[in-house]
Length: 232
Image 1 (cartoon, rainbow, N blue to C red):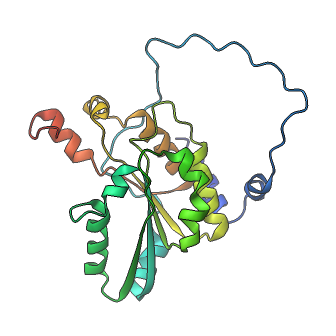
Image 2 (cartoon, rainbow, N blue to C red):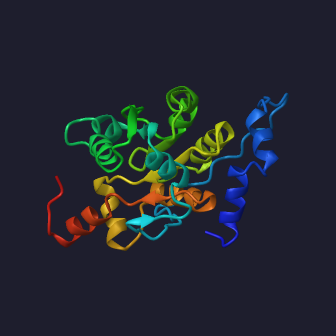
Image 3 (cartoon, rainbow, N blue to C red):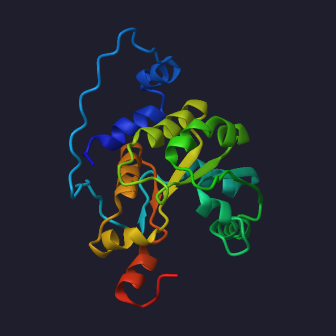
């Protein structure tokens, strides 16, 4: 990530980037006479991805508005967006249930409303398509996004950025956090101290906009790689 990214990302949240609003309102037009697509290049036998270092937490700009509202009490709505891991998160031992109970315990004055907008087998591309209906329509104070496993290694940042733009065009006081879950194929990347390719893309988006990221599987991956606990 470049040193000037946080300032540029904050400009979006502060509404000082009108090009974002213009882009969001633009209607794509199909070209009248599209040029023929070039022949696809032969795939590399060993694709190279730009990987970001793994960490337990990158706080960045934090969750200032959510924190203030939780401390003051009153209605507080958190929306969880992701795939099957998020869907299962509402089980008694799932992470959605854990976060909900933690918030209620630490902020007893707040009335915590939880919306689980997970849909199994979906990634950030479909998440961006349904974001208005499944997230913004719920009037969230905090959005937690999880697409690390379902986004493949070739994922592009556009869908994650689209969700960030949609959020702050609606209300710049809505806080966002992105967190990373674990698939067995990710272990080799954590063994080298890196995030897997999909999470690395998400991490660069988060770095640009000052969004915190949670390496929720950081310790588990290290313990699995060291043989301390089994993969199960």
